[in-house]
Length: 444
Image (cartoon, rainbow, N blue to C red; front, top):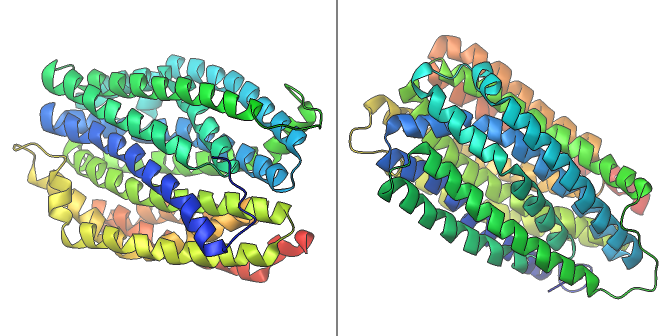
């Protein structure tokens, strides 16, 4: 299943490589959404709010995993594209060992600081206990989450986007089944949601690591490789650390926004929790396509094929715009039905209205953010990390600042209005950096 992305029709190769990744993220997000749907339907509005209140904190941990994924994927893709398999194996082994150590340290930190983190975002007292419980169980399974994400990044850097899909399908279906048993049948509430994710992610992680080990051993090379290399760790960190900072900065910004949302009460939190899960589903789809462009870019630039990289981006942008259309239609026109999926019969009108308003404000700009995230994929895959971070930080800073300014005039609706503004300005910056062409200079 290992695939060389430097040969064949760029559009066809990219689409074939991306589709399994796209289907993977659909399944991944389905079980994230299932957590909230089952919590809201069977445990009530406060349970939905509790899961949502801890969400920005869980995303900080996820951000570190995703940033590490990006760092190793770019380096491994470049070595794979250049046919330097000895260095590629060294990069894989170094990534896995360092990821294990980092994930254990973060897990310990999270377990010790759960309540402090929940207090930092001003979680309302009526959902504090459930929110802290959910977060504590989530963090306990962070080792599995981290290593699974890194393994997925390694698979895709080798041109294999199908293997992660198989694991995700199994993990997603397992998570939904366990959610139903733990919450709907056994009535474990928020704890049931968290334990379902813990178990499903743990099984997927173990199977992924076993498969990855066998796959790497099967790649023959006459070049020497090391189990761990400080020099290789430095090279990977050169991309991973800025990516982790970027991802973490986004998550910290979301904590500020969540803190602001929390000030409007549990009903607004519940409505926002439902809508932001749907929005995250959409953005993650675009980000996944951006990751595919990153791997495509890294392999092709490693082989010195700059023009092929440009063609790949053009194909990716077309794909992103096509994907944006059904999300816009579903959320803008049928937003009420989408939010009601998360709500029980006694859900408040405030919660429902909050979710619908959020979706109708942000969904028309999915076409804009899709372009930004795909261009970001090329910038990241080429190693143009400064430009990539500049555009991302601009988006986040603007969204946080504008949220606080506009909420003073338009209440919670002012928070939602900050999304389109930040996305649009950041998209313009990303396109500018791409058109400037500095990312391609060292490969020409």
